[in-house]
Image 1 (tube, rainbow, N blue to C red):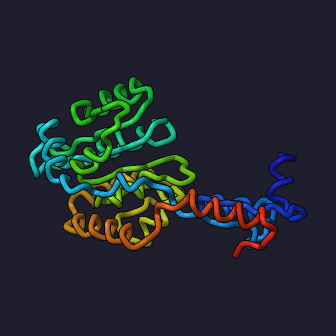
Image 2 (image 1 turned 90 degrees about the vertical axis):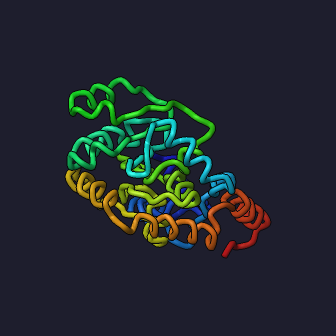
Length: 253
């Protein structure tokens, strides 16, 4: 705490590189840190996450893998640390879907973590056939091409880079509003955010509503347009500029 206060306290003259507006507000509330000392940098996603020219072929490949026709909804989760990412919330939301919708919906989870607790939960809720854990993968872009919705009901997420990556791939997003990069989803009109405080019933209803909404295609287009027109790549370059400017003894603005 003393070290943290030395950096963020009002008596300090440190300049702060911030990757999340949410975290910035917390430090300002706790330490009274002057707003002018924070320098927010853009997200730092790779341009490899942009939808490739062969995205339609990737989509076909993934959907064939799960025997999914175009009437089947593939809901994708990406990220390791299943407890924090809210995999339990996602499984419960799938189980709460109306029967006809549930029969045509798969939850595909890409990432590293312990699967047993969630498979037990899925079995108890009667949705084990709907849940697919794919482990850690290096072909996430293919899964984004093949999916219909990115679900990210995280308990806490400082940023949530996967939200921007999904938008770059043209994938609509349903995430908790506690995700730092949820603000980009909102500004882009690329999906919906579950409000705080979190309620499982709210997530359940929002998932069912989005999967049945004719606006799904538009949300995907909005996300791609936003990424095309917004700097979501230059985190490291901007951070370097800030460091060099402060090191040279000039005030960064």
